[in-house]
Amino acid sequence: MIRVLVADDQALVRGGFRVLVDSAPDLEVIGEAVDGAQAVELALRLRPDVVLMDIRMPVMDGLEATRRILADQGPSPEPMIRILVLTTFDLDEYVYRALKLGASGFLLKDTRPVELLDGIRRVHAGDALLSPTVLRQLIEKFVDRPDPTGPNPAAVTGPSGPTRPTGLAPLAGLTEREREVLVLIAQGRSNAEISAQLYVTPATVKTHVSRLLMKLGARDRAQLIVLSYESGLIPHHRPPT
Image 1 (cartoon, helix red, strand yellow):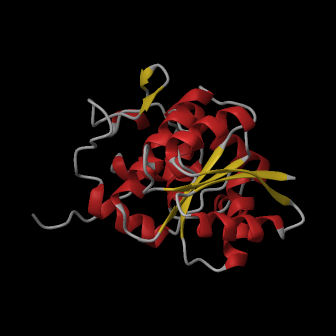
Image 2 (tube, rainbow, N blue to C red; image 1 turned 90 degrees about the vertical axis):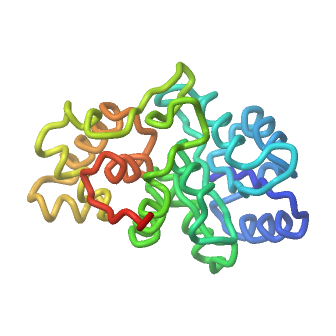
């Protein structure tokens, strides 16, 4: 059973998500949070598998709540709490920042019910719930801006301080094969698709993904995708100034 925490300041939205999630035989809502502060408290106490996190909430927004929940877990926690960001806008600077902080993906609030349920299952399994097209638009819009989430805009801050600087430096320790796998991950390919394209076994691909996560200090595939763009491994078109 996949245990879900719903964080949204609108009671009607929370109730709708609860009814929908509880209608699935393999999913259950274990708590509801009315703001980001309560989301942090409930997440750390109840240890849900997935948090459906609204971005704009009172007291503490979903971005800060995401940072606190993931920072508390430390490196490579088991089991890991996954954050699925919910937004009413498909191009939202807060979504991009949440992905940098370790959120596993995002969905629009008007997503079809079946897609929401499938999205919860996918992020619980460790997949990145990101459309490559939408992610590319997010990168092109926000990647060259200073990140206001911390004093060092070139790093992602973890429990022990900055852990993942951007630029080409983080890729220096990767093998050529690991770079190939990272490019395919950034293109939205599944492990099975990567296996077929590189003529290696799925188990080998899984090993490469695990090594990428370890070497780059990423929590999941979502952060690997963001890093591949930020490092310049995947070219992006900068917006005109």
